[in-house]
Image 1 (cartoon, rainbow, N blue to C red):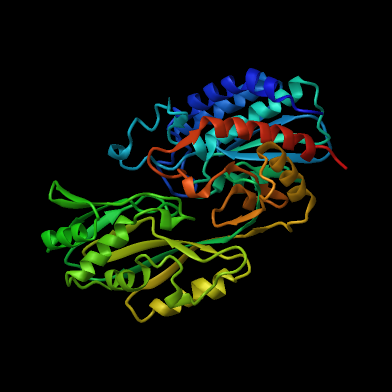
Image 2 (image 1 turned 60 degrees about the horizontal axis):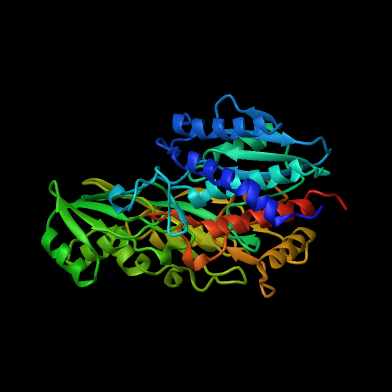
Length: 450
């Protein structure tokens, strides 16, 4: 089947964009991060909306009783082709940093602005309407095609744990939550907590999730003016309010910590610099602040899939104890337990710091000459005209890790211009159109059996 770009974009894009705006307006971030916590009503609303939309298109649909996931099927093939999307988003963070309400999407200067516009609600809708165009125009996939919707990708992935435990696994499929042209490799991801007991003369806290750079931390304790002055000398913003010193950074995706400004590590560096004694401040100041690969501890772990990166998301220091989270993205050929977790645990053991391993997510690796990679690359080059494009490796962990035979395919075109997890998250309208065309043409190739 040949895809008619004029009909695809002329008759389907506007509705896809309107549906994207509808679900961006639903603030579907987790309010309770505990495993097994109830799904928030806002997240249920997004899932219901997408399921009802596809039901109206003639799909057979299902929502898990606890709303952890849902899916919609088209066709009757013996083999299952999956498109796994996530409907939850990261929290909006400090609302004052947004130019507009994060859940009142607007189009400005050719961009759709709003939390989730890029990660992952925009790409989700582009896939739905790309496939709608195909079936409206007589396309018959050899696979049964299933849109799978998760509700906790940004936190604990229990949605996909539940799906994998209870439902049919995909024989092939993709996740539109990575990067173009296609992601042949995804690094290991390890979450750890550095904790300890220590009688502190100050308190601080900040952050909500493991996988985003901490952008706002509040501090109470001695030497506030000295800390603020030191931060100012280093071009870091802070302000006092309600007897707290607030330190401001810039959020960024956990796989790209160097694109943000970590309020937490800058504050801990300042605390150490003004002479306040604390084991966590001393450790972060010397080994963690701006040292994203932490080579002083691990050596050079870089391989063909990139460097090790470390991101702090959550920090809490009370008068009695402390907790500092690290989200590691570990090159595919390394052993995450042996080369990172065990090394760090031993390294901090004599520093009044204990390491707690929270989780290790598996890597993803597809050979560059595999059929799925070659088919996707062929379509990408045709649509974009970029004949020099090559499959890439990323630090981000997508739902491709949730089951075998899945690959991350789009939706980000420019890693250097990423707004995922950032304030004023946006996606370019032209990029959404490009996505729709790429996905429509790729689905023709990928859902036909050879």
